[in-house]
Length: 249
Image (tube, rainbow, N blue to C red):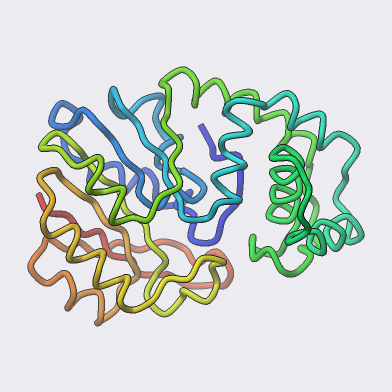
């Protein structure tokens, strides 16, 4: 199934290729998406493991996922009446830091800001045809997926999360902000965070798969691991975009 949202750096195009690099499903009992984002890999299968974990550092994104999981109907009612317009986009963008909204109201505004923006940048109106009704109705399917396999939704720092869930039978999928593109994300991710992620993954008992941009800094950082090069179409311009798949198995 598809993700309910569009997100910068989403893996819609590469999800099949990345899944082909996953270890044998029998080799892990827990599947953890450390940088959950839009969850394209999570939603690609009906179930990856007995325990599935979705995590993200963006509290607003985590709130949206939790509201879809537990309050899909209420969120759908909150979004009823909104349409694709610059005025609605500018209104919800202006309300981003306003206090006093309920979790469902916050989730609705965050969803609209993401859905109506250009390239999911959350900042500029997209000026393109989008059917909000279909997107909102799809929450019902997403809720069923999140509830059927009891997906745990976390909001933790990546290092803490990895240490909490690490086991010999754990498999971590990591899709961090790409090196030199960190400015496009609301959550701060620094050069030292890239190094901290490498150091954390170097000591785990379980397996990991890491997706990154093809960058000399990244290649040097993970030179002691297995690195495969893949290509995808560039979402926002013509041509190909090279990415790396890095594993410890």
